Image 1 (tube, rainbow, N blue to C red):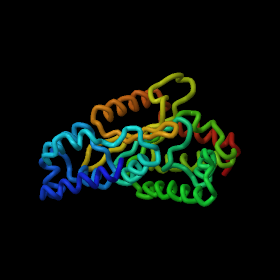
Image 2: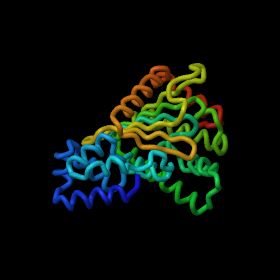
Image 3: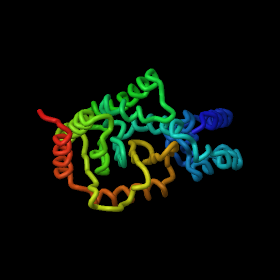
Image 4: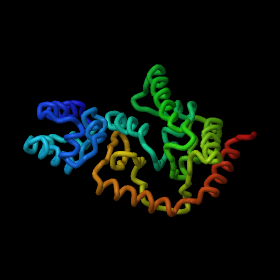
Length: 264
């Protein structure tokens, strides 16, 4: 989301003499939602923008100048990254690579090594650091609740080396064994299923509506339209119903790590 849009909203609110809470009450939104929009971390839905226009008496300006839906991954993921740190529940779907918050340092470095155009060693170090910083949400023993739905390809495709894969899979297996993360693997045998189009993250919060983040090649988007988020939640649930149960998924992970050469 463009920061300029959030700054303009803030300027209009202050010109109207309203606090964030007063604007939230008038627009039937939460104060934290207003704060995220002003800070450039969230994109208002079209209905939210219409309510803000009515509350501020700005005609249809906020509705007409919503940020472009086709913003680049880097821009949108920054918003998703910040929201990830505030979520009470996160559900990930990964089609090709391990979800970022579950990656080990060596695996993350190998993934980032596939970037095009290539990044410098310094830039890769910075990106790896950011990814490891994201993983710190798992240091809390309970929150956020994290589920991961993984296509079997995430386990089978060698990223970096067989040793890196063994280390990465065992890192995830230990999180599962500790009860910190719940993982379900979608086996190849299922065939086609919901979510095959792209990766997906679903997030729930204490004081604001849930949202979703989807990502493809060179493009990503935060979704906060209730209709779209509900549809994506339904697609996730439908795919999850076809995946292996937790114990069978863990057994597959342990066997795959062993195949890659892992031994205690």
